[in-house]
Length: 132
Image 1 (cartoon, helix red, strand yellow):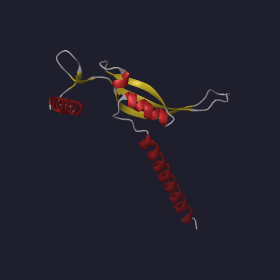
Image 2 (cartoon, rainbow, N blue to C red):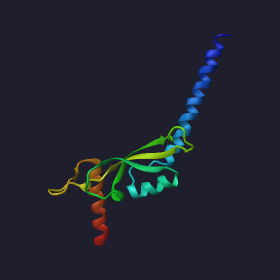
Image 3 (cartoon, helix red, strand yellow):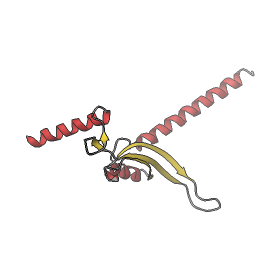
Image 4 (cartoon, rainbow, N blue to C red):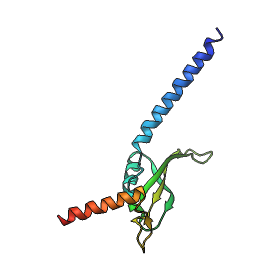
């Protein structure tokens, strides 16, 4: 009989962990703003009931609304002790505000980096569509 109890406890614990992971995955997917412009990410996060908070900024070549979100992390801020306030749900974001591609006079991504290759491709697509 003692062998059954640990097995049941382990099964229950595994089921609980599975549910916790599945539930957090759905919430994370709904607010995944990585790769979006900050202006778009702000709208999406606000619609999801989260307060966007800029945690880190890399570069200074673009204004914040045009920067790209490179990381996002949920955070819940508890109200001060002995108050009737409620917790605040926030999303900490890291912004990349570098120019698309580095030039001789402007810092930015290397043309050999994934970001730089994407910027080169976008610039080529934009110039070919505007010339036609």
